[in-house]
Image (cartoon, rainbow, N blue to C red; front, side, top):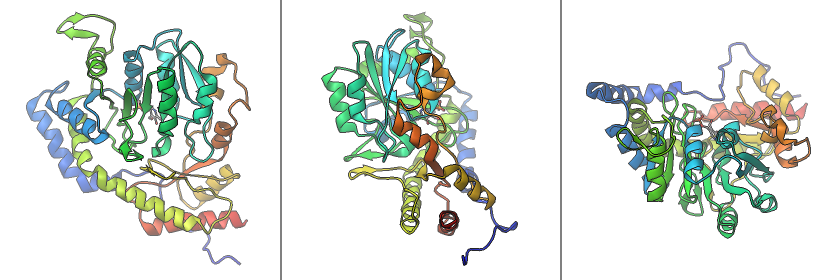
Length: 379
Ligand SMILES: Cc1ncc(COP(=O)(O)O)c(C=O)c1O
């Protein structure tokens, strides 16, 4: 007989994600930062944005940051700055958020998918090698869930084929690979500050970081209508600028990021320790030399959908990132892929489940989540 209590209507819900405790802790700082911007009445391309660009670039260990309107725009502008245009091919993983692919499509280029490693959900470098063609113009490496991709092998391939490498760091700000932060490996790297990210704005925002002065200058032009001087445009660009209120909010949050990442890692360690006793569930893998920042704590389980329902009945939130790999999205039906083309990405889409994860999550809540999972695997 199980000693675990039956679902109780009075039980506290555990959401998969919750920003309210964070706001309760830093609300006064945030409001002061917003007030500071309001008092200047400078809302676009001002001192807060410039300061944030320097601070985020320094965190990533690179020279330049270029604030833009979203992580998606960061990808589009970085691809364009690296020379990608209509008719080109860009290699990227089949398991990622759709924006990684749609940024390529937005330029009229074609995404070429590669399968992922089953234990990390990140690009399998040997897959890249197989799919390079004379039309390949760039590679995007995604650091999914907050874990760095296998950068040594990916960089070696990019170098040998003379292909620009763009890192999609949307989920992985601060993650470490062999002593270096993600964002410092590629020709350019893209960050999203979507509210739910480890460093999240109060709206949409993003940034490209790079060590290249030339790319940085081009990106500053591209984000502002292609203008090289006031009202003088040398090429078509975008209006994609990070506004001052978001920048000021992000600067407040950046001061807390290291502490929040430590809390996420501590929560992940607690989950992984407790899940050791639970058969049939695979916790996330952190390869040696990597420091995962656990944007998501993602397990896999063969009966994933039933597990998700079991957790929901116990008021425990969970999410599937992502239920469809990119090659099976209706968006890419014209590419002619079928089920079975990228088996690891497809299996991940059927089995992954992201558990509650945020810095303020308590150890007793983690214990309750794991108890509910243990109860499920017994039935
Ligand atoms: C892997 C990945 N790439 C790109 C993006 C796009 O970022 P944004 O939502 O800021 O446009 C996201 C964010 O949702 C993401 O998770």
